[in-house]
Length: 453
Image 1 (cartoon, rainbow, N blue to C red):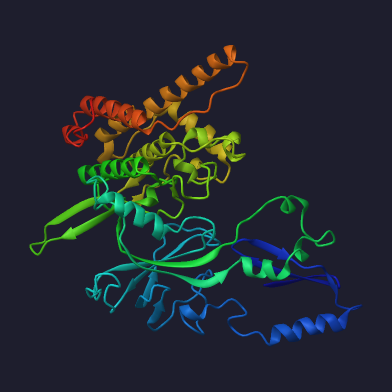
Image 2 (cartoon, rainbow, N blue to C red):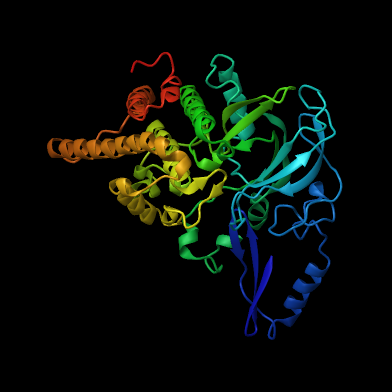
């Protein structure tokens, strides 16, 4: 909450992950008694009234808020299934500097508790705690991963390539509570609510905690290990999409690796498709595929358009596949190991303006010969460049067909069907051609056996 005073008028503002609510102004001179009642009420607030979550550390500042401290001691949690876990929160895992706001917070943790499902001790096992504020109507990430795990039982491309959920619970806070209490008051004709907000429906958000195994970023690996993990993520993503589990937000941050170390020190690395909190379960989720989800630098070009942001373009498998391909130039041209090179190219893609991102990526496709990969990625860049040229050719082909179709069908385009099998087959043909030209035999060996290329 915040109190804004201009001259002699005070407004009370409430901010949460669903948006902001502004009260009508109170004249602190003409209506002093009402203003004093407000101050007296706020004086009597408990820590919980101010937004501190008692579950996450009692008197400690709420870990969701920017700059807050983590609880010094262990935190005991329980969920509605009767499962319990004790966590020691250690430190934030910061992927990049950014405003936190509604952003997911990930905290490194340890636990002396037994695993809630297997009852095997978790002591010494690296864990992460994911704190987020998803929309209440969106399918729970836990439910999505349960569906993915079920699909993994019959598909080796999924098994071992999705994250393991250790524990999950909702922490009893919903942004809908205050709006339900206010009823129509906050949208009353004389309330200080901008006209644009009166027509926008923002679903309520809840506070959710999920404990996962700790994974490593895919950029912690290089060369063959990186690309093998990337291919495994492509296969896993497709297999789950075909099984009705649609990820909807592939990005570099969502590609991870699971590293298993044998007693003799040998490592086994496998790619993991991570972060399923924006995923849809086809036919189950209350979503149409028209939601504006995605990370701009990796988003498909067709989703960086006004039509998509007006909710007129349905997300298809090929859009997610394109996002996975856009990860490659980001790594090949900007990364040296886990670090970004000095004065990295493609920086203009990191913008909040989707049209700017669209133009910059389109220009990049035309200027690719002018870009040089970092020394460790020179050969792989030849391969990745061919995949990007394919994206450009496919874009041109679809635009031509759309123009031709308009000419003889009165401007009414048929809705494109999500033919994920055909798109997947086309991808592997281009993939093999590019890998063969770049003499990357190990990439050719990763092509699924059932693919005719």
